[in-house]
Image (cartoon, rainbow, N blue to C red; front, side, top):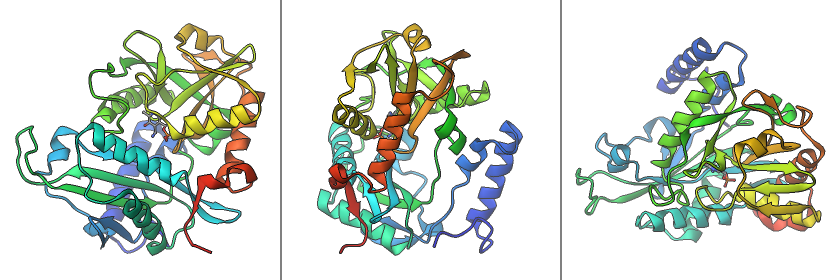
Length: 344
Ligand code: PMP
């Protein structure tokens, strides 16, 4: 079972307490942002084919990716579904991990099947029903110039319990968003189709700015000034009965985005992939973020302007409910999206 932060007196516990205090100092007690940082340790982390204890999952300080941002990673969720613990869209996430690596010319030294099995085994070993899953492929210790020469490619898989990323309150009533002063990278800059750690420097700047300014999340525009995505989510808006989401140019090809599009098609809703401006977002009837961590989070305000009634609208609510039906195994038409942790 996951260790409570107060168990064992480990280094992890001390760090968690310290982080919590700092967050409370920054944002005030009771704020969901405090829970965000309270990483709850599990027992073991998979590293390069073997399990190591949580506190022993360490790398050398001269790990290449730590310096130059060349890691590629995934964020996946396992839910305690009505049919047993199940990872949502596992194969699609592992495919994206390999595609990210391919874009960055990183050769993961395991097959896709082996990574899928290692993820399921990591969940089983940690005896956890529901968790967030973080595979990370990175360039290890070796050369220290920018060119990584023959530095070994390493792969780790960690799992831990993680509640709603933007808070239960946000999931229910919607969040407040700020258009970021930071722009999404140009399509020819850091390759946003790849989930590369380097891209998250941009996300982090935007997120920090938004939180410091009292908002819940940042909305980044692309280099042409159109709405792109959140710091870790894709975005949808609804106006005059049409659902719109930005096309796959300067955004991550979100798996939740694709899931939502399928759910909208199933329900014969009108949906287009089309660029839109921030002022069109201001006058949307509804808007919401999608992401593995953020799930389907309604947006109730952008730049202090209420979106629609300022409450989650009917389309958002219907699609959010449909999404949760899928992840919890209540939707018979999309059972193939679930990979069960315990066979049989
Ligand atoms: N955009 C960015 C920048 C993200 O980090 C994420 C989270 N992976 C998403 C969108 C949503 O992607 P997904 O639905 O696959 O989690």
